[in-house]
Length: 382
Image (cartoon, rainbow, N blue to C red; front, top):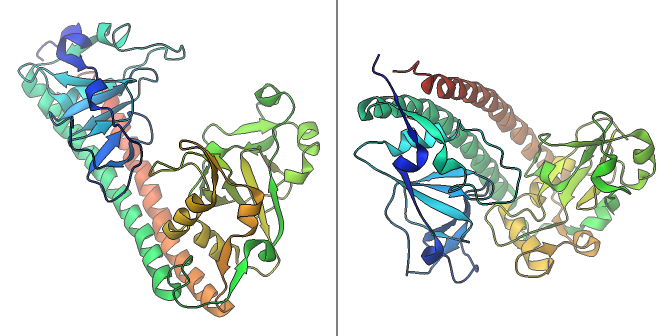
């Protein structure tokens, strides 16, 4: 086996400050051509029509200087802020994809609020095999990554199929292009209530107990348990007005609206035991009347068309806005005959079953990729 040479990460990745590529305006539109990036989870914050100072020397790695998050970028872009580094490789000795995958395995203390590239990451010693081996390892990891990305794309296709089916059957739920009866959401609900933040805030969280959902747990049609908090029975009983029941709809109350993954107005359904979960002050619970089709209403609230309506009625500043209870109460909800709603949900459940199987396949492909990732930098894929 050819020996891998230890070297500083900063020797093979040189940084450029992104200052000249920062957008002048954050008034993004999907129709604009140039993506505005962050290295964080959102990645693409929106699109701009600005034509000057677009970064185009791709591929590169963008590195969040405060959180150490990374993204591989192979298309021209602009950025939102200077809180990142644009990392370029020396192509004569290194492969950018190899370095990207390697960086995903690096672990450092990133809890302190400071800039990490110069102080920490550039100084890290990394194993560097010959360039041909780097490319071989990157190709293996690319193949494993392509498999999981294709699975993700199929899941997205099923989501698009669901929305296409909905529009075909019911038309635009906001414009009501098919002329259905319309009711205010308050007329379909027995309760719309903002959650509570317990006295003492996060200090009262416990390791086990009553599930306590926060806005970061509520996504589109999906409740994510990663990072979920728990409270004890006494704290829960002091906040019974926001205690959840099976099939309650949760909706985020605050967030930014100028991103493609806006955190404002995301909605999902709680599928759990009555009075065994609660929500904090950044989440509304929406409890529908008996006989109202929860799945149908939730699909309306999470549709692309309704996302636009939510943006139009919320209040606040440019970067962060809020949905008031009155906004939610006045949400117009189309009310087609129940048998048509039920037919849609029947098809929706079939599609969801296929999606669930794909999600299982995705989990397996994630495990495969992570296994290969760990083996790669132990020299086991050479």
